[in-house]
Amino acid sequence: MKVNRDIKKDKSYRRRMRLKGSMSVLVSCVVIAAVIAVNYGFGKIPAKYTKLDITGAELYTLSEQSKTIADALDNDVTVYLLAQNGNKDSTLVELISQYQAYSDKIKFKYIDTVLYPSFAAEYTEDELSENSIIVDGKYRTSVIDYNEIYVQSYSNEMYYYYGYEPDVMDFAGENKLTTAIDYVDSESIPTVYMISGHGEKTFTDAVKKMFSEE
Image 1 (tube, rainbow, N blue to C red):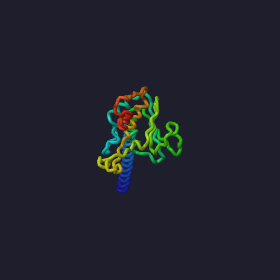
Image 2: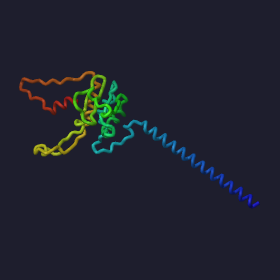
Image 3: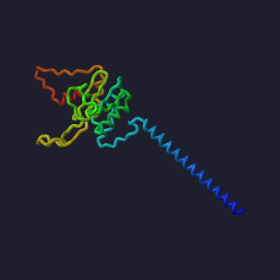
Image 4: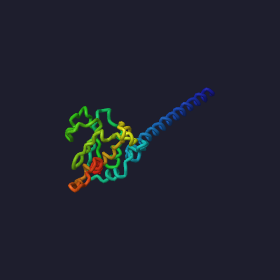
């Protein structure tokens, strides 16, 4: 009788262990499914709510003006980034994603310049640098060369006066991209006239650039 009791006890122990194992597997499956669901749901949240900008210059944080322009788009605007596969500027990709988060009118397309070497020629006669951007809208197209996005400047005015090389690299990506997006979706473009012939001072290149970018 003792042997039978031991056998029953052993069977009961194995049964409990199997049940415990099954419960562990079930709990693991539930946890994994929950993690997958949370990650999937999190991925559907716009980047403006999920990505924290920790760069010192806030490269991934759009200004209120850029957000307003992105929100107010009436037509689709396509932003093309031209670069070889594996050589995309991650800062530009992230910046463009921020615009997309504020407007479903903004589309992003990556163009591999190795596969499509003549793509840029459809929009401009200029030879564009790697990671240049083309913004195409309903009314017109705007081309942003990569050299216009990262601009060299001086940290000290004395460097300029004494002929030193520029020592600071400024990121003008948002300014250029916002201007281009607004430009290609504007049906009419204001014209600024400069009066001459009466001793007026002419516009400097800096002033002309300011008008064109506005």
